[in-house]
Length: 252
Ligand SMILES: NC(=O)c1ccc[n+]([C@@H]2O[C@H](COP(=O)([O-])OP(=O)(O)OC[C@H]3O[C@@H](n4cnc5c(N)ncnc54)[C@H](OP(=O)(O)O)[C@@H]3O)[C@@H](O)[C@H]2O)c1
Image 1: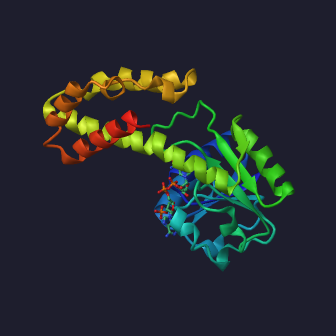
Image 2: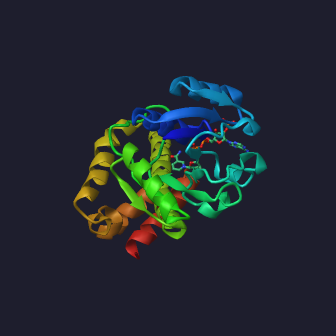
């Protein structure tokens, strides 16, 4: 496939690398910031532009990887006739693309993607959707060239999974960040917790999460819970979260 990538952030970069690795031709990177567009274009060996009016119209696939809000601002300069245009967002309907082409869809990576330190050895789960059977087949075939883990999900299914993704990834990472900050202030070594973090996640390969609950709240060790809350009293936000989580675990 001949591909144009719009955006030069984390998703554009990681998917761009995979697309190139799979043997497709990336023709151009179009992005708001010329420096970022050039950086990615240089890595992918293609041209770049910061002017959407100069978008290369000869590609078969246009991958729009800009922020959710910026997608609402795609204007007539992106009119691409019958070209297949897809976005990469979990919580934006594919219909947002209906005014710029007759063939549109979504290629949503259900993974946290970062330009730096990204392990590309494992297949990224890709959720695909399109407005016609023909576009869906084309997109599915393309998706399978960059990952063996491809599923179909419509707008509602993708939105549901995006909410779940925020819970399991963004929220847990926020807890890690708060715990790391707490450890640092209390002079404890956060790194000692890494095997515990890994073990808790790896258990889910073979067990359902509800059956893997452990800790003082599950055991209803009230005295221990009171000790923990007393220790967290100076950390108001962490104290509130600990209390809420404890209540939620005790009354699931
Ligand atoms: N990162 C993830 O883990 C992940 C996973 C799945 C799906 N997604 C989805 O993929 C999409 C891109 O996310 P990302 O993580 O790649 O974001 P990102 O790293 O923040 O990059 C965002 C890109 O959008 C451009 N942009 C921002 N505001 C713009 C505007 N007003 N007009 C035009 N371009 C604008 C930025 O251009 P500049 O270079 O000029 O700033 C940049 O190229 C989002 O819809 C996100 O929900 C992300």
